[in-house]
Length: 166
Image (cartoon, rainbow, N blue to C red):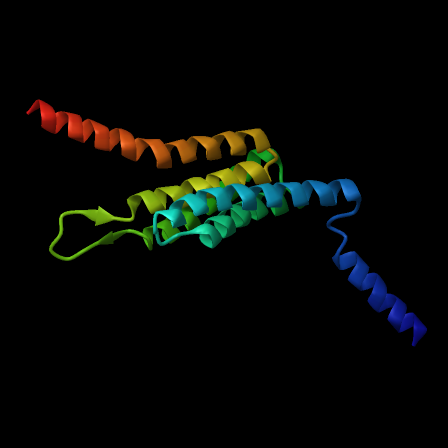
């Protein structure tokens, strides 16, 4: 009986051996947490404007993308081969983004393109965080927030300026 319990305990310990030390556990936690935070920042901005994909969606997309590359790295996949994982993430998130795009009957306007592009960028930020490119992930998030916040104001100002000139 004791031998059986020992085997069970050893098997369970072996199943959780993908984080063999505090350094590796910390690295995984930092990358996933950063992906969640950065995705959350983009989600907060989108949710504050009443968009369909909000905080939770963006956080999950970023964390999922980070996890795909992290697990591949942990499995020993060479960095050159990670491009296949990234391609899979891009394609998968493309389908998710496609669900956010609507063309309403009788209208010429398509809705949801910015939301879809934001989800796509959020996945890319998650990939960057998961690969250990934290500074790139943070910079990309800041630039995305600038695009979300300032570009609509710039477009509105340009449209207003154009009407005044006419």
